[in-house]
Image (cartoon, rainbow, N blue to C red; front, top):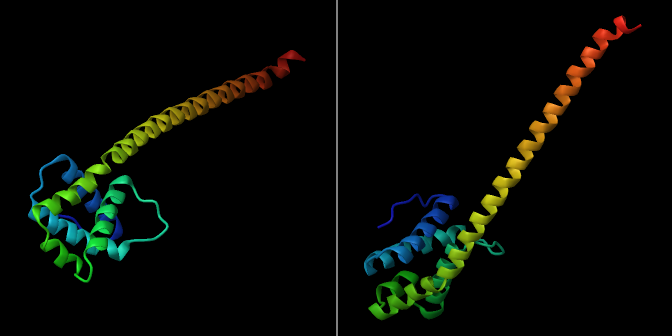
Length: 153
């Protein structure tokens, strides 16, 4: 079972991201999958906001919960999940796996943006240092010129 603080939105989003990551990259038993899915769905419903664009891992989780909601009929979310067969649980896992490419693309995009930001920040620092150095040199030259003015007349 995944341990996390579900009392605030950031904790819920992190827990969902971790859940999806573990499901995609490690072997989570079906009981743990169902337990965490139900627990996270309840927490997510409290913080879910329409009109927001969520990260790919959160969108994968939302796709699973929307599928469950479309299939459960009059059953509660928990009742539906506890009655799932192994094949139906695998179908839910396949929904997560279908989002793997989107998650990978988002990670690559983040790494690209991080590198571009690093380069831009470095250029900004270099420009500021060069600009400060130029001002410093000019300032020293001007003060020297003022000191020598009395000798020049």
